[in-house]
Length: 288
Image 1 (tube, rainbow, N blue to C red):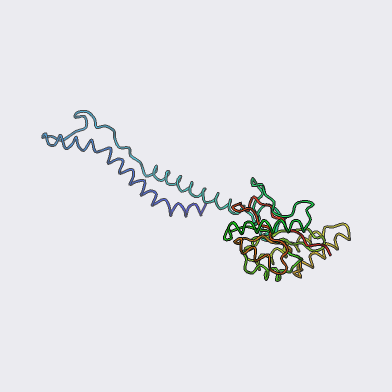
Image 2: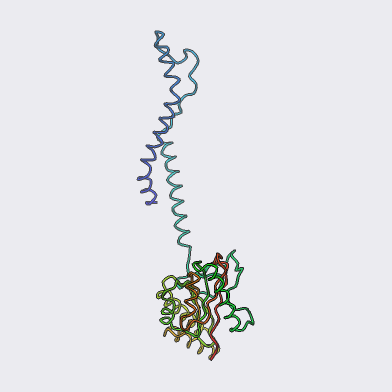
């Protein structure tokens, strides 16, 4: 209540002045016919008295100070309600600070909501790695010949698992939007949004390590618990767990990326497509 009183004290005086000004203007506008009648009667030699001739059209409504105060309080109360509702709505919004997620449509952890992936960029089910690599290379070659400067999204598969530092070296000159990782040989594949490569990779590994610790503590099977603990340890040690990424670059530069040591496949998405409608799937390294 003290907050509302302070808001009243601050807001009511200017609101009241505005309302009084408006009321005065309305009253002045409505009293103009009466003033003209007075001037007319004065010119004819006598003062105008109420009742002389037809009454002036409309009488000004008198807005009392109490009415002005009531209107002002209603306006202030409405403003306070809007502010409170906006603040509560903002507080209730949540976000995943780590940015890691199961692989899904589009880079950047695009919401699955009403947007469904219409295109998959990656190996088809049952397709051999050699066939997939050849088809991706032919597709990129055709796009480069047609428009070498066209900006394209592409999913990049690495020849083996890489540490975060090794990953940063490979993609240092490229805009990386998403990375894929999993503790070999059979860890769950995860994807992480990348805006700040160093900070986001660190956050993603730490987040998945925490999740592995949680699985270890809740597991009833000793072997499952031990496997989860090993995954958590590997992730916190910044293991060689990264094997793919989504990048954006001109077609000609994607060709150059394919020539970097350690890069296995560069598979471009169709030109002009929205990344939110694409499911990017990198080729996982061959088991050893």
